[in-house]
Image 1 (cartoon, helix red, strand yellow):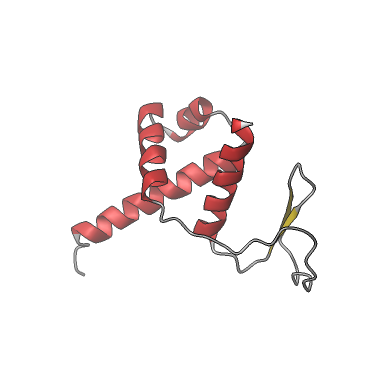
Image 2 (cartoon, helix red, strand yellow):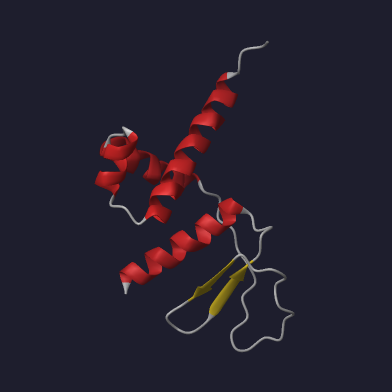
Length: 113
């Protein structure tokens, strides 16, 4: 059995932290408590969160303002209702990394206002 390369180890470490950060965000727990329960230091958590946020490639999606007639998403897994009343219907096949970016952007936008 071959040893993982440095790049494979780096990718695994990045994915590990990406999953932990997403887990904390979805848990509703404060960072301090989450870190205590998972044996992490807050310093490491915040450093990785900042690092990963910088590394995320910017992705754009076409957004149309106003009502748009679209067929309903088959078996939506989740629906996010924004304060404006707009709805995001998210299907089972959504790219998890892209969804994290959207939710982070929405969270950042709502905390700024």
